[in-house]
Amino acid sequence: MTRLVRFSVLVFALLLSAPNVLAAPQPDEQMADEAMETRARALYRDLRCVVCQSQSIDESNAPLAADMRAVVRERLLAGDSDAEVRTWLQTRYGDYVLMTPPLQGNTLLLWLLPAILLVGGGVLVVIYIRAQSRRLSAGLDPEDEAELARLREEEGLS
View 1 (cartoon, rainbow, N blue to C red):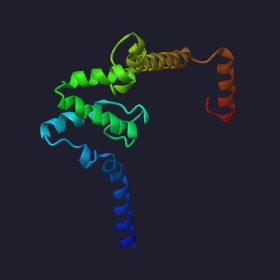
View 2: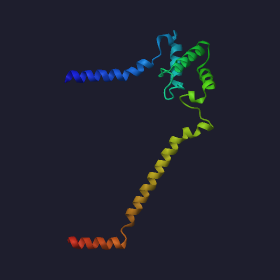
View 3: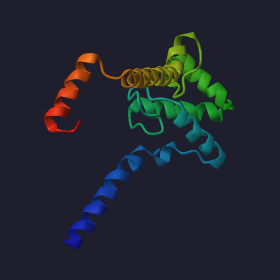
View 4: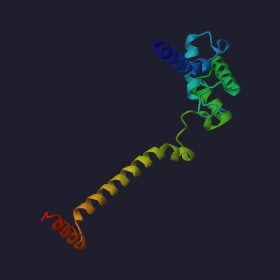
């Protein structure tokens, strides 16, 4: 039984680490300069793969993500700043390529929706609690009082 548990834990650990190993940039994608590689990896995490949609180009194995990583490396080697690289890719692929969309008119709802939902939920909770407390403090109507008195008499509680 112990061997089976150990084997299961090992297989589970390998399965969890597999996506990270597969998504790591290949050796031919890594830059020789460590500082440049660090900048490139930071940019990879800030840019969305337009094919995978929910993954950054750092995590994606899609051919387009590899092409985008190559563009990032080329632009950095050409002397572009991180902002210039982002702007170049944003111009080419649109705002969607950014993992954090810019705050502008067409993304305002995207940025405000969590706050709106939180405040709205809080208001609904307050309204519900107030309604419950009013209902409880109002007491019983006369018909219910008479029924309760009758039931107490039957049970001998009065």
